[in-house]
Length: 243
Image (cartoon, rainbow, N blue to C red; front, side):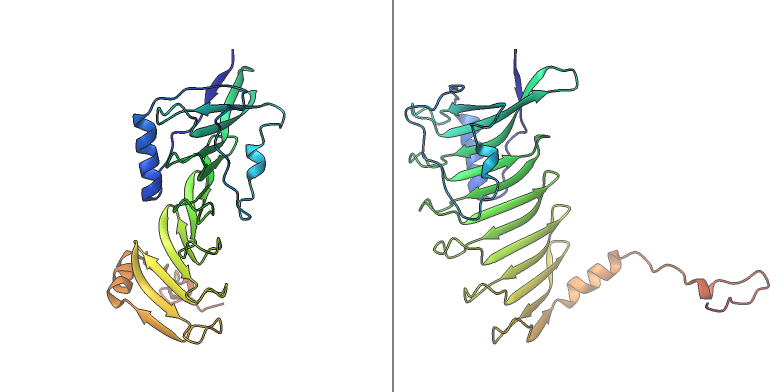
């Protein structure tokens, strides 16, 4: 008998939190290996590069449809990849998940998982116009990057958030929509430390704005510099000469 397992859904922005709440409150009906007469149409995006993990025709794949809202129509599709675990027992893991978060019959959120069940990426249509405007990538299940189309028009990223160990480190913005970054923001302990602005849109910072308090705080938390070998006393009591 096949067993299935996958990671709990993670919320990273307000819309995803709302989705998780909806999942918790709704029931789920499953139709394995069926297309479903009322299956919602999948969201499409030129930027979504991992759609192969949603391929239900690949060997060892199984698809199931769920009605989370209880409307009688499926609003979540899961694609499972089956393989054998360490005990040799067939086990399925969710590798692709697509959801219709506003129950309008069109899928607007895609999540991909690696073979370990860790989140790899998300893509969402936040304003439900049929175009993706949010792209999130993860490293070992931890958020690494969020990219937004803040205009909800172009389908191209114009604001990017970079993370390290789950903490915000940098934001890059394209104000005029020419595809080039013209604002760079750097963060320390989730606080803005400095910001560079390209005033004439030539790709170079023209002016820097700095938060001296944030810099002072970062300096306090920084480890003390290692002692220089040239300053270490020798056995004779004299300082060693630098090599």
